[in-house]
Amino acid sequence: MLTLDRLFERTFERYGDRAAIRFEGETVTYTALDDNSAKLANVYRTLGLTTDDTVGILMDNRPEFIVARIAAIRAGVTVTPLNSELDETQVQSLLRTEDVDILVTDETFFDVVQTVQREYNELQHVVAHAETDPIPIGFHDLDGLLARAPEEPPETDVSPDDTAAIYYTSGTTGEPKGVVHTHRALTLNCYAHVREMEIRHDERLLLTTPLSHSAEPFARAGLAQGATVVLEQGFDSRDVLETIERERVTWTYLIPTMIGALLEDERFTDTDTDSLRTVAYGAAPIPEPVLQRGIEEIGKVFVQFYGLTEVPNLITVLPKSDHDLDADSLRSAGYPTQLVEVTLLDIDAEWATDVGELAVKSPYALAEYLGDRTAYTEDGWLRTGDVGRIKDGRVYVLDRKQDVIVVGGTPVFSTTVENAIQRHPDVKQVAVIGVPTNGSAPDSTVHEQRVKAVVVPANGADIDANDLTEHCREYLKEGHPHSVDIVGRLPETPYGKVDKQALRDPYW
Image (cartoon, rainbow, N blue to C red; front, side, top):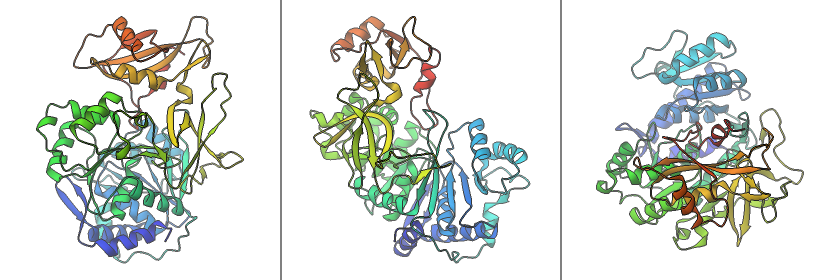
């Protein structure tokens, strides 16, 4: 039972004509998802794929993405989702370096895929879906292939230890790395999502972030429960509010900036959000004022999760019951999930006195990095790259190692300063970075730094840097910003996180 093909076989047997996916007002039933994924699995085999081959998926959020993903599972081949938020250069780079035998795509990416196909001859087949544009010459028409394919899924002999998927990290600390996951790992991860993220059989899950990244495990868990996955091709606060009300959404995943945007939208107070039972959030620290308002306006429906591509989504979870505005637990990332161990490893830095690098063991952690790069310590721990502490069983994620700012030998955690600044009523968004003092070496990352805050004002407010510094003194004993930059928006990575490396580049 620890293979994804068996998981979906049982799912389709059980849920039949229930609604599996809602997209742009249309419904895909579990029966239709069963039929189309079985047919596409046969297409993969007809095009010559074997268990050693890989299907790449480069699509916006749409039902065809899920069909292509499940078809790879049922054909017994590996899948590599490519983030639809990557720019053309990044997509081309991944397609040239990743061993993709068949690429499934849609009209959004026809131009970039044609460019790669002309220059990269090893991309054997492109299967394309289009609503309006004609299918380019040389591409296979997805709908035409499905119309001619056999309905019975192909026979497979998949082992729990076989590779099921290769996901790519965000690359915030270097080039993206391919993360190899087995069927066993992703099946256990699916069951963990169901339990830890409180996904019920009758959920209507709204997903707006890319299925090629952290949204996909939520979709998989929802489908395993017979829930309905409601897809949006991106986040727009107005569209999301309308969808929550129209579709009676019960469960959704939003990154913190999205939660803030919903609460600030003028239509929020007129929108019926009473159907919401769970709002999962993660990927970045949430400002305390945003979470406080969310609890006051929507209710005690929030669940925080902390994870990595290497340990999909779930290292720790802070459940709804711990979202107490007056409790210290709210400053933590919650407790390790039932299938995860967390420890602290020493950091080779003079300032690391009472903290360490968070490290993880889990049966749903990665098998290896593509290219056989070492993932684990000799004792079997996976390093996360995050600095933290563990207290009373809870995990506190303090900062990324590269984001810690060392001032006079004392660490300043950027997230702590950001939380203080975010309490200012005129601040919409903030990122805190370390910049070198005069005379520091260009490559210095541990000595002689100063704290810089990069601030996006709320509603065009005129922010005074001295006022902001005085505001910080109310909440911080040290680490007050030495300088403040006012900007219209903060740069983001394709994965929705603030790109602090882009902010640091002009100074280092």
